[in-house]
Length: 304
Image 1: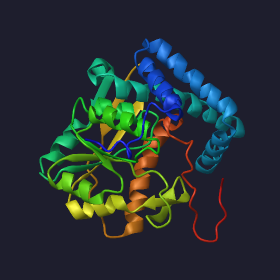
Image 2: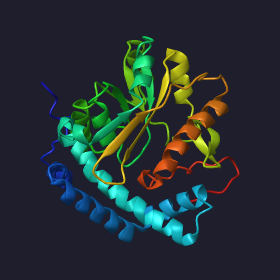
Image 3: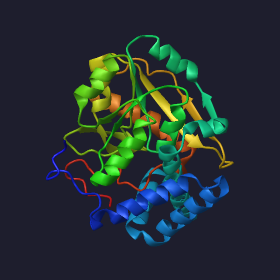
């Protein structure tokens, strides 16, 4: 029996807002498609209008990464980014709360042969995911074609963590804490594919500085380390919402050849280049709202 003294009581009033959020996500997952899109855009518009801190972060990221755009073009991209990420909240709800089978008719999957070839080697696979607004829905759609585990960051709110973990357990084979390197290596060596997203700033100690959109960015070293420890092929996966706003495309690129190279900076730069090329296809769908360039080389001032 669980120790009630150490288990949180989710009936406590401090969890009522979380229960409300979970209920709204479940409701949003079942909205008709057009209403789902409209609701997501409204959420995105409200965030763009009132979330000044996040808008500043997004504006800074886009100014750094797209210096060739005019001020007006960049301002439009900022707004489109918020709208796309607002829709992404409803897409996440759909991925977590609905059977992905109901969306099979909306998916085009390209490059499946690359993953089949990788898995045929018998060494598992390390999937390079990207923090697009479609991330969790992309995971659900991917499960229609290939099973995979996922590396994730546990949520600070224990109730939402339980909801999120249970939801992902229906999509992925196993959810692995990002600090559990042994668990990741063990699963890959057992022949599993593991979905891993290395495109966030995890701080100086875990990273090397490598170019991302021409900016030196703290880039996690773990991607190359996992590949070296397991011998697994590294598989870039691209996924996005199509311009019709009704269908999605998932695409595997060929496994990275000669990776890892033994040069941490070169390997990090290569991963960043793959991610950058994917983002440039649909830049508004990327999660520009996070501080990708938070950690700077010593002596260099911060951007935010």
